[in-house]
Length: 404
Image (tube, rainbow, N blue to C red):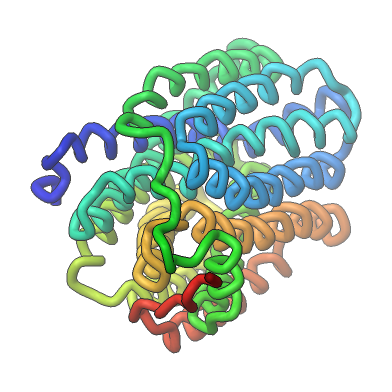
């Protein structure tokens, strides 16, 4: 797989993008570990804290098409640098607020906007414009694996930081660590500030977005990705609480999140490889169906640590491995000129599901005392996503000619 990434510095660009995503996703995916400590310290309540983190899920998605469009127009360097700084600022300010509104501002807006600006739409779009077509699938797999490695590394680190310094000190430490992504920004954005302007007769950004939103395959892809966001956000936010409800130590939650990230490294690299041999829509359908079966298995098993670990590994194999084939289908349908924007809109659908997964999880546990209804909703949505991906076509869409 790496043979396709060696020409023209492609490997360096890919690894730098993976490094940035490792930090931004690692920090973002570890915040669920702070739900319990923040609640204990502030007494805000699980529902209030879950709502703030749900806003973060939506904001992370909402900023993706905006950041992608900015990178498509002006280049990735400024977008990525601003994202890293906002992420660090949001984490650093969180210990200074003690209200639900304050938490929405620091975590729901600042942290999430920063993490979103340094995430998939900008990174994969910037890398794709510098890579040959045959290298884009493997590159997306490697970049995606960087985010998974971040989750594997940051989840146990964040848990230890909370134990050693309390949740406030841990937030400050993660803010400082996130700044380590800044030196990698130049490598990803090297080689020109922006993509070239549309050629004569080529459609512009507005026409590209309008055409994409009218395409059936693109909309089906959005619907499936909505489901992916729903259960990923639910698990990232509420798995620590689920573990606590089962009477198990917090370390089970942190190691489960870490195992999800570790398994997804394998899953992302393998999916990146499969994209050159199988249809991306088939890969997506199989992954969504496997999640429905895995959650059903979890519900039938006793709540023991080994069950959480097996569940985490199984889920991790497809966790964010849905990103490379989803971005790949967008690229096949519409090309890479506006990939940052169009894939950003797909991520917005993902995070709309993420908002509901995080928020409804908090409401469910507050009202019913457990997450039973959420697990069943996960199964139904995953099965539906598997079915919705099957009719997707992957042939390029012929754009309408630009107005004279």
